[in-house]
Length: 419
Ligand SMILES: Cc1ncc(COP(=O)(O)O)c(C=O)c1O
Image (cartoon, rainbow, N blue to C red):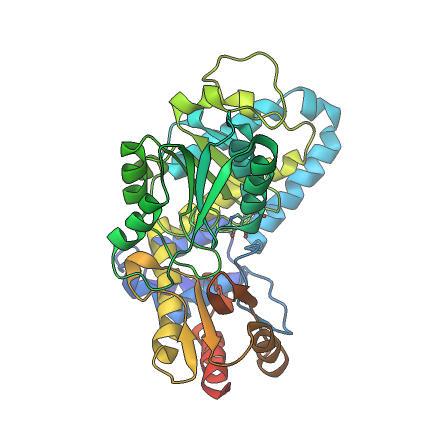
């Protein structure tokens, strides 16, 4: 059945609104012969995905970067898990809680392309990465490398480690428009000394959406005996990669971002040989040194969120990683290509597709980002995230797959008019 017939039949069958996950799977089957890049710009098609999202009518949400709120298909399943666990109470907690969490971690490992014995579910990127920063055996005079564009919570944790253990933090600045990968690799390389123990690098810088050449940075750092921790808060389930291909030592991400898991779920990947040398954030009972569960004690927590991970993965797999990436790329290119050459506009995200995907940052010459954010919201009803620091002055624009080109046209109009 082709897409048009499918949509027509779905409408006739009373499914004209939101499609179930099975309905979505059928819809995607109906377009299996269409390439991801062709499908990415088919607004008619994505309108049927959009129907799964309950959107606030008062504004256009171009700030999906903090939290990729759930489509109804995942939300309904999540509410079901809340009800079920409330029904089972302690019985659930004492019987299958840990078994279920382990099986969710295994599903996540499949998405991440790593073995399940190297990945745990945490509450968020902050917990994952701060566990590593705070959990290494630091000695006075040891050094760590990071960028001013890194996420403040991690920079703060490095500051704490510096005060506590006498670690020296080397903070570099990533240019918004690098010309080559080597430029970035050399920047990180020049901050390394014989005392460097850990290098932190963002896979995708949150304030600009710039993707960094992480594999090349890892290769360079490892040659110099330095471990690498990747902040993948914005890369996981956004664009395609397998964590082991990055060859990093540690990788953290938040699942409530691009995977659309309910709030409060993340992952930590630790290379097998490194598991034994990290002090857990919260102590666990006796385990073998290379057993990753030794890093995973958090006490009683919202276990229904864990269960919704499988539903979010089903939703993600139904769309397909390649199609999702293509759609996000299309949306970013759609608006950036229309404003990049405007005289009043400053784009803070590289144009090279290898260096960006769905997120981009745009500023207006001479205008404070907070004023720009206010104007976008008040005059054009567009919600964004203003950024003013670390060499980035503009509003972060983060669409999601449901975002329409009609919404982006409003943004383009606004950017054309703002002076
Ligand atoms: C690059 C980056 N790292 C870490 C985080 C922290 O994520 P969370 O608050 O989910 O721990 C964020 C959040 O936006 C981020 O963008």
